[in-house]
Image (tube, one colour):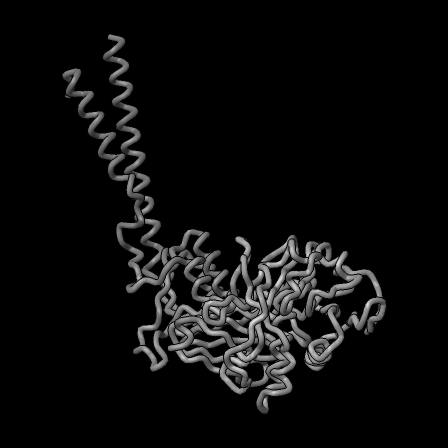
Length: 435
């Protein structure tokens, strides 16, 4: 009798659970029916429609992206989704423009070169043409054929907000603040190389101090004779193996975060041999002696880089000879360029040789310059990849808007649970012979 009583109790419990699950299913269906069909809005009118959408009991919301969606409105859609509304979106149904996809995967990032004035360079990729503008006017355009492989554009100093438009996607690009740069210290023998290296950097806007050695016990100093550390200098440029009094401080300076440029055979100086990317080989004359060629550096004499260290990165070659390499040492960076008598480029080159020589020296110094981190830009509107942010927030686009009144309103586990409870009750009753 105890077993029969226990079985009867279990059957009543299963029947009650079945009725409860059925009641829950009916409640879900009736409450869902009150929500109506899918609400469809266009992104261009979303700001106006959002208050009514947030206050209504909407089962599903579908957004047709006919215009770029500002970050604030995208975040509002995320909040609506977290409140229980199913949010989906689709790209425009209009015919694709001549530029390519209507909503291409645009990504654009701006950085400032570590040079005086901090010119802004933008790295961009997209499947369609990209147009850049600031608060005043259009700046530049990158065609889809170049943008799809990734392109870099220099825009100088933008006025106001910097933006990129590709198809129907508009991105506001965060521009880092310009960093304050310390002076450059040039060391080596007094001569033509030192004279024109200092001139090129100063003409480009760098503050330059120099310690140039004329003879034992005789040297020429430009600037003060202070301590060699990153609070005073951004970069040390060693023109040759003559480092003089600076030699004892170079390694510590680099490991603390400073930059070091080693020109010609300077890497063979005992004080820097331990941190140089490679060893400077025997000097070789260039096969081409004219500087009016596509690569003027190929007309310079060269100390080829030999015995490259395992952690160094090769950057440039001349045939089978390695010409430029770099590596990190502690918190700083070391750039080694085997070129010698670079002043000949400035003196013997074409009409643009002086400007090109300046830019070449400035790029080398900027590539290793120590600079304090600029203050972070907390502007929420500056996003370089709006489509990627949209997909991350709301999921990928859908081809067809979902139907809010479909069976997806009921959890998938509900019907199997009801059937399992009813089947278990029926099997128990048959087992004990009850009707």
